[in-house]
Amino acid sequence: MKCKYCGREMIKTKTPFKRPVKGEMLVVPDVEVYSCPGCGAVYFPEETIRMQAEKLAKNSFR
Ligand SMILES: [Zn+2]
Image (tube, rainbow, N blue to C red; front, top):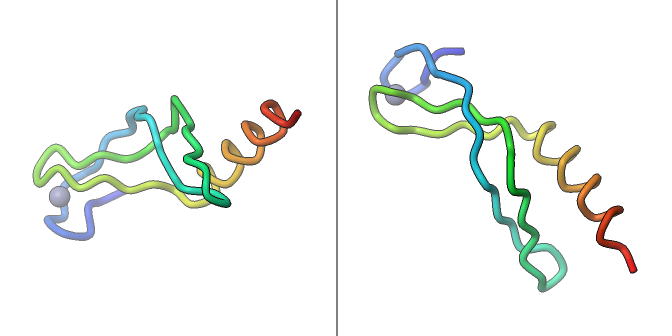
C-alpha cells in the first residue's frame, strides 16, 4: 500500500486505537495499521477496526 500523501510504501505496524463509543472510550490495544516512514501518516483499515472493536465489545459485555 502506498501513502496517499507522499507516495512512499507504507509499512504495517501495530498501534493502540481509541474511539468514543456511546459515551465511553473504546480502546483497542493492538490494531494493525499502515504507517508511512516518509511523512508519518497512519492509515487505519476500517474493516480491521470494526472487527477488533466488535470482538472487544463482546469480551467486555457484562
Ligand atoms: Zn507519506
